[in-house]
Image (cartoon, rainbow, N blue to C red; front, side, top):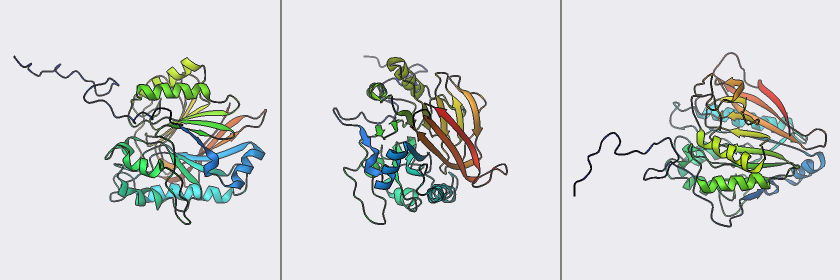
Length: 350
């Protein structure tokens, strides 16, 4: 038997595609059958926070991605930029204490650890920097969380069997899976687990189901590490198709999509009509921008010279149903922006 001679077309695998093969693109493992992937926000709220949301029909939370920075090197950002973001969200909680729009948790958009998600890095890159933040931090994984141990350490720190509250120490979170739904009194947040530009068929089917099931009397937010649209030369076709097919199959359009991965702040409108905010500004070195986006999104604001955090406020009062947001600069690489500046603010009806 004559063996084939390898040539240009001997291996036809396209590493940018979502086809299956011996070098299948990275993706989170499918959820076990019959697993309840819903998580009730009341598990992580104080009695006062929950009472405020129920009484005022207003809930605020922080969000950003890409806070992991190599603690041994300043090449990938620095402990200082990450700590500035941590201090910024702490300060907002103090300034707004006991007010309806005081953030009551943080939703991390992935790349908690950088450059690879090893368990020994969590103390220096996550627990210590955010030790002064009084709220719970929930998360979806990013590509750097996947590197090294294929989400084993992310699972250890975010998918614990149960909450084990200890005075003076942030507990490992008890999230149900790498992709999951956060149920709150005023909003449903569907978290897509994207560790590459590929969503496996089982997660696509799950996303369609959760999109269809989402209550119509609550705001609908989708969170993902890889943005479906992004002005950074990338083409996240797999994420874009997953959301687009979900909309087409269910008739439900997200009121907002939030994402990280690109170490920038961006706000845009997708061709499908939903707004997209990219906030990969948690501390990793800022990245480049492009004036065009694959897929045809319409840019509103682009900035790659700041670190910081986005605060989202959901108002569910009849006649005033809005998702409002503002981005606070925590550190800057540009003279155009200063610490504490509000870089952007917006409001979308839902």
